[in-house]
Amino acid sequence: MIVQSTQEDNINNITFTVTKIATTKHTLLAKNSSREITSKGITFDDNVAKVSIVGVGMISKPGIAARMFRVLGDEGINIKLISTSEIKISCVVDRKDARRALKALHQEFELHKA
Image 1 (cartoon, rainbow, N blue to C red):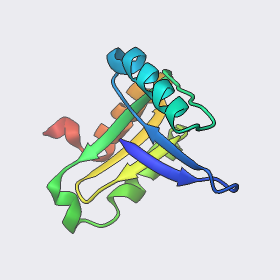
Image 2: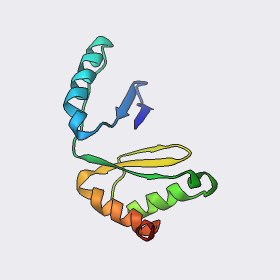
Image 3: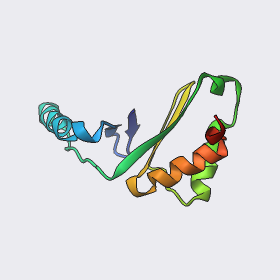
Image 4: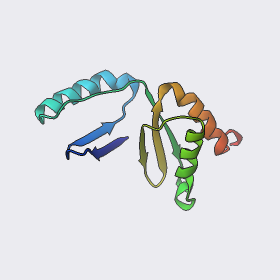
Protein backbone atom coordinates (compact mmCIF):
# COMPACT_ATOMS: atom_id res chain seq x y z
CA MET A 1 0.00 0.00 0.00
CA ILE A 2 1.49 3.35 -1.05
CA VAL A 3 -0.38 6.62 -0.56
CA GLN A 4 0.80 10.15 -1.35
CA SER A 5 -0.82 13.25 0.09
CA THR A 6 0.00 16.97 0.17
CA GLN A 7 -0.06 19.09 3.30
CA GLU A 8 -1.00 22.77 3.56
CA ASP A 9 2.61 23.87 3.04
CA ASN A 10 2.84 21.94 -0.28
CA ILE A 11 4.98 19.24 1.25
CA ASN A 12 4.27 15.73 0.00
CA ASN A 13 3.80 12.89 2.45
CA ILE A 14 4.37 9.39 1.18
CA THR A 15 2.98 6.63 3.35
CA PHE A 16 3.61 2.95 2.71
CA THR A 17 3.09 -0.30 4.51
CA VAL A 18 5.50 -3.20 4.88
CA THR A 19 5.35 -6.44 6.82
CA LYS A 20 6.40 -6.30 10.46
CA ILE A 21 9.41 -8.47 9.65
CA ALA A 22 10.60 -5.93 7.05
CA THR A 23 10.15 -2.85 9.27
CA THR A 24 13.77 -2.53 10.44
CA LYS A 25 15.24 -2.93 6.95
CA HIS A 26 12.77 -0.56 5.30
CA THR A 27 13.06 2.05 8.06
CA LEU A 28 16.81 2.18 7.45
CA LEU A 29 16.30 2.46 3.69
CA ALA A 30 13.75 5.25 4.19
CA LYS A 31 16.11 7.15 6.52
CA ASN A 32 18.93 6.92 3.98
CA SER A 33 16.65 8.05 1.14
CA SER A 34 15.32 10.86 3.31
CA ARG A 35 18.83 12.24 3.78
CA GLU A 36 19.58 12.00 0.05
CA ILE A 37 16.57 14.10 -0.92
CA THR A 38 16.82 16.39 2.14
CA SER A 39 13.31 15.62 3.32
CA LYS A 40 11.93 16.67 6.67
CA GLY A 41 12.44 13.11 7.90
CA ILE A 42 10.49 9.93 8.45
CA THR A 43 8.19 8.48 11.05
CA PHE A 44 6.88 4.97 11.42
CA ASP A 45 4.14 3.26 13.36
CA ASP A 46 4.36 -0.45 14.06
CA ASN A 47 1.09 -0.54 15.98
CA VAL A 48 -1.12 -0.68 12.91
CA ALA A 49 -2.65 -3.40 10.77
CA LYS A 50 -4.03 -3.46 7.25
CA VAL A 51 -7.43 -4.98 6.53
CA SER A 52 -8.55 -5.42 2.93
CA ILE A 53 -11.53 -6.47 0.88
CA VAL A 54 -10.45 -8.02 -2.41
CA GLY A 55 -12.40 -9.35 -5.36
CA VAL A 56 -13.09 -8.77 -9.05
CA GLY A 57 -16.83 -8.72 -8.26
CA MET A 58 -16.39 -5.30 -6.67
CA ILE A 59 -16.20 -3.71 -10.12
CA SER A 60 -19.85 -4.43 -10.79
CA LYS A 61 -21.15 -3.82 -7.24
CA PRO A 62 -21.10 -0.17 -6.16
CA GLY A 63 -21.19 0.63 -2.46
CA ILE A 64 -18.67 -1.93 -1.20
CA ALA A 65 -16.36 0.77 0.18
CA ALA A 66 -19.28 2.53 1.89
CA ARG A 67 -20.30 -0.74 3.55
CA MET A 68 -16.74 -1.36 4.71
CA PHE A 69 -16.39 2.14 6.15
CA ARG A 70 -19.82 1.92 7.85
CA VAL A 71 -19.00 -1.43 9.45
CA LEU A 72 -15.69 -0.18 10.81
CA GLY A 73 -17.35 3.03 12.02
CA ASP A 74 -20.14 1.10 13.73
CA GLU A 75 -17.45 -0.89 15.55
CA GLY A 76 -15.76 2.35 16.66
CA ILE A 77 -12.66 1.49 14.63
CA ASN A 78 -10.77 4.53 13.36
CA ILE A 79 -9.47 4.30 9.80
CA LYS A 80 -6.02 5.87 9.63
CA LEU A 81 -5.39 5.35 5.92
CA ILE A 82 -7.40 4.20 2.90
CA SER A 83 -6.23 2.88 -0.45
CA THR A 84 -8.54 1.69 -3.21
CA SER A 85 -8.38 0.12 -6.64
CA GLU A 86 -10.94 -1.52 -8.90
CA ILE A 87 -10.61 -4.83 -7.07
CA LYS A 88 -9.32 -3.93 -3.59
CA ILE A 89 -10.08 -1.63 -0.67
CA SER A 90 -7.49 -1.51 2.11
CA CYS A 91 -7.72 0.31 5.42
CA VAL A 92 -5.00 0.81 8.00
CA VAL A 93 -6.34 0.58 11.56
CA ASP A 94 -4.84 0.30 15.03
CA ARG A 95 -3.40 -3.16 15.54
CA LYS A 96 -5.52 -3.62 18.66
CA ASP A 97 -8.65 -3.31 16.48
CA ALA A 98 -7.56 -5.65 13.66
CA ARG A 99 -9.25 -8.86 14.82
CA ARG A 100 -12.50 -7.04 15.60
CA ALA A 101 -12.37 -5.36 12.17
CA LEU A 102 -11.85 -8.69 10.42
CA LYS A 103 -14.66 -10.35 12.35
CA ALA A 104 -17.10 -7.50 11.60
CA LEU A 105 -16.16 -7.43 7.91
CA HIS A 106 -16.47 -11.20 7.60
CA GLN A 107 -19.93 -10.99 9.11
CA GLU A 108 -21.04 -8.03 6.94
CA PHE A 109 -19.90 -9.66 3.71
CA GLU A 110 -20.98 -13.15 4.83
CA LEU A 111 -17.50 -14.57 4.33
CA HIS A 112 -18.02 -17.07 7.14
CA LYS A 113 -20.47 -18.84 4.79
CA ALA A 114 -17.93 -19.23 1.99
